[in-house]
Image (cartoon, rainbow, N blue to C red):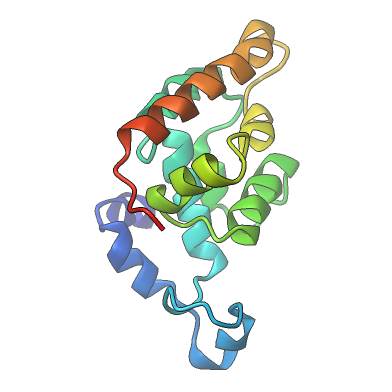
Length: 153
């Protein structure tokens, strides 16, 4: 029930809801002025939305090839490699919005999340989709970078 209600909240409200308390704010990189640090729950929810195609719409097209539902990301007890890899990449590079994701793809690594995304696709039933994902990923990233308005830094 909470999953349905939480989906209706804007991401900015969720970010405030899942911000860590001040005692743990020392975990933020020195000089980072992007706001309070975000808890793992927010990254889980962001990954869930990413897998469902609500952050990058074209990623949602691959949902039919997934072995498991994206809701697995919201399960606190899930320690599957596909969950932990995606979460660790999002946390490590502080990707908690579409703007940060597209900026990272543009400036640093267009293949970020490709390997973790491949883990979600069932390799036995959808072998061709796994093989062709890299080419589709490159096109997808190129389109997202070209179409998303990013401020110059």
